[in-house]
Image (cartoon, rainbow, N blue to C red; front, side, top):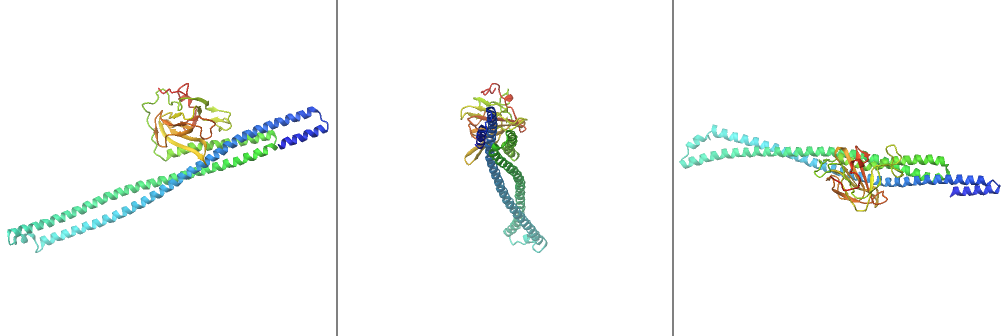
Length: 425
């Protein structure tokens, strides 16, 4: 509005001094051209601003999830430390019991030895006692008593020895449990440290996004007073900077999946009997149209990649909302999550990431809902969710990504030709 007012005032001044009509026309054309350039740049900045703000919200959600994981890990560490303390007390008590049992055994041996010495070497020698019996019945009674004493002494020592052996077994079990608990605690401490480092990176990325958002907002206000050439340079720099930040923010979802894999027992299934024998993948959505292919594109909200300013890292398949989505290959689910904050779905919306053999991964984004959870084993063709339009989506479609060693790759060469289709031979 200010630019138009200045232009109008200049035009009136020129008319008052009687300048030629051609000069006025040139000025009007130049002003219109500049205005068109400025409006175009403002549109590009506004598009990137909206996407950066959405990613900043997603980063807040990511930070909250990371903090929740840290809190859970701290709770697990505390529980493990309590278990370790209980086991240490149990081991101490068992050791004391073993010592007391050994002392009891030593006393029993000493008492039995003393009895035998007194019996065989003193006036209480059993032979004279037996021979001096007044009757045969008394003889049998004295013999039975001596035998009974020997039997009870031997039984007592056997019981003490057996008790010590059982206590030793209990102590070994308790020590094994403590060793497992110590190893678990060490692993949890390592997980906590990794989470704290991840949280630090996420906070740094969030601060950079916020700073970029503030800068772009300022540029949108100041751009009206700048030359078209300067505005173009500033817009290019801001868009490039935001594209880089947005690409890093989108990578955070993959980092979460990698973190889950690093701290969980990941077992990838062997190829199932029903797996396609001709293609590595089947179409995850078997009806629809490819609305956006893999590769360079003109959409400003797509991040840079492979040397292009904007690059689509997957393929979009559009069809009716609620269409079944299937696992494209055998694998293990490493993420099944929802990017949401204050009721607003952002980023991939509801998404699933599956790890496959040979370091391949597949992602299924913008789902209406999913039927799996992290750790689930899936076979090619298993139902994992339904097509939706959650997150940063302009309409019902599936965003399907296929990655090798963490790098996006075109999934079409791995899929049956002329799809989407139901081919799975």
